[in-house]
Image 1: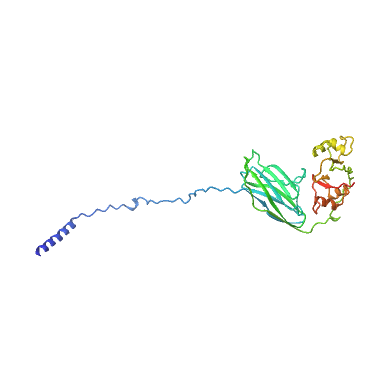
Image 2 (image 1 turned 120 degrees about the horizontal axis):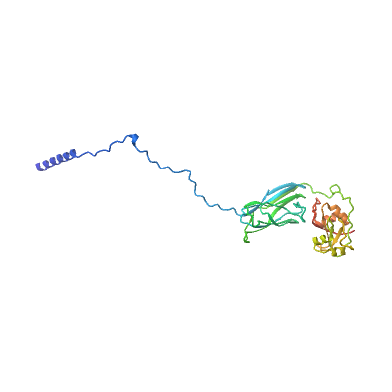
Length: 329
């Protein structure tokens, strides 16, 4: 027992000696605060632009501006057909329908035969532009040396309200091609609506235009086979009239019993021996003509001429159109 205690005492003493003799770990010398390097910080640039996403092109489409209008009988307004996303379109065909008993398209260019709408600024090359009854047919293209635009006005319609009611402006047919002739899908977004209010104009004596006072050209006798009555304009001769209607000066002279086809005066009405639209006889409307003067010239009643040609209650007619007539003089 004594040996155990002695050994324990010597172990404790040895441990104490080893601990006291161990060298302390030296601490690094203190560096003055002003000599310490500045702290390192990580800066995150907050103004870095996000990765640009690819832009998805707008699908080719058509729409009307304005899409809805309200008019009183006799008022005019303009409705534009706009195109969007058509940068890849080279040729565009469009047909717009409406009720011709409620609205009429006002001719944009009276100097050209027939009724036309006003071309827009999108496609400068107009291939087709005509109004037939209640339908506008329009086709335009981009010339090869002109860059195609992505958006713009295709065509503008100036419409006049002629009777109360509601009619749609419906884009019933749309077709398009790119520069290589491949079809391009163009979507008409919505139809337009025209609402007309007001009383229906009645054909009373007060609303009729006054009858022209100058001498009315004599009406050539009907030939029995039909034809188109035409009043010779200043500077024209039968040769030019024949070119306009696809016949010859000699044929016109024969139909009108003229001895010399070279002798014709401006203001003379001649019967051109070509088929009239719808058969029978037609009359080529010239500037200054009215429904009243035409009916009087051929011995017809006003109601008969209006009914035969589906003329609106405001009695609007356009130069260059051919009206059906029944000669009785």
